[in-house]
Length: 356
Image (cartoon, rainbow, N blue to C red):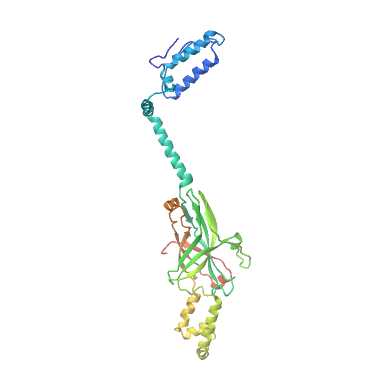
C-alpha cells in the first residue's frame, strides 16, 4: 500500500475495475480538497477491492489509517477532550498567519461591501438644479381687484429639472426665485405657486391655460424630477408693488379731489397730463411705486433660484446634510407691450451672459 510521499507528489496506484464507487468518490474528494487549499500534495491511494469481499472492508479501514497521519487529515482531525486552550489558540493563529491572501481578500471584500452600502443606502441626497436658457414671462389678471395689483401679477414660468445623484430621498418644500432689476434697483421675491400643464403655453390667450397647484416634491435617490414651475411674486423691495387694484383706485380718487383745481387750470383730463405740468407732486412717487414692475420692455434682470428643504431630523441626516447650491441667471426681455402682456400674451425671455 502506498503512503504519502515526502515530496508531496501525486502518486496514484493502480485503479482496478473492482473497486467500489465509495472509494472512487473518496479519491476525487480528497484531490479536490487538496487543490482548493492552494497547495500541491501528492497522495498515495491504495488499490481497492470489491465491496463483496471481506477484505474490502479492511481496505477501507487501511485507507483511513493511511490518510490519518497525512497533513491534510491532521488539519480536519478533532482534538481530544481536555486539550489545552492555549494550544488550540496557537494552532488557530498559526493557520491564520499562514493565509495572508485570505486575510487580504477578506479586507478587500469588506471595503467593497462598505462602498456598496454607502452608494446604495447611506449616501446623502445630492441635488442639482438645471434651467434652460429660455423663460416665459406674462402677467396674470384673472384675480379680483381686491387681490391683484394694478396691471396684474408678474409671472415667470421656468422649466426646471432637479436631479438627485445621492442614494437617500430628498424633499423640497418650496422653490424661491429672487429677481433684481439692476437698472431700477427694484427687487422681488417669487415663489413656486403652480405647475404648468402643456395647455398653459397655448398662444391664444383666450384659451384655457391649465395648471396645478405646486406641492412639496420628493426626489428619490438616483432619479430626477422635470416640470415647468410657475412663480408668482410674494414681495417687492418698495413694499407697494403688490397693493391691490381697489386700493390704487382709492388713491386716484383722493388725488383727483385734491388736485381738481390744478387740473381745471391747465386743462388736464388725465393724471399723465397733470404730471407733465406738475412733475414734482409727491403723489407721483407713490403712484410709481404702485405701478413698478421688476421686468420691463427691453429690460434685464438677474435671477437666483433656490431650493428650500425641510431641516434634517435625525443625527445621521444632520451629519450628512449639505445645502443645495443656488443657480443664477441673467435674463434679457424683448420690446413687449405691457398692455398685450396684461391681456395674456406670453413673452420669451432669454438668458444672456452677465455684463452684456
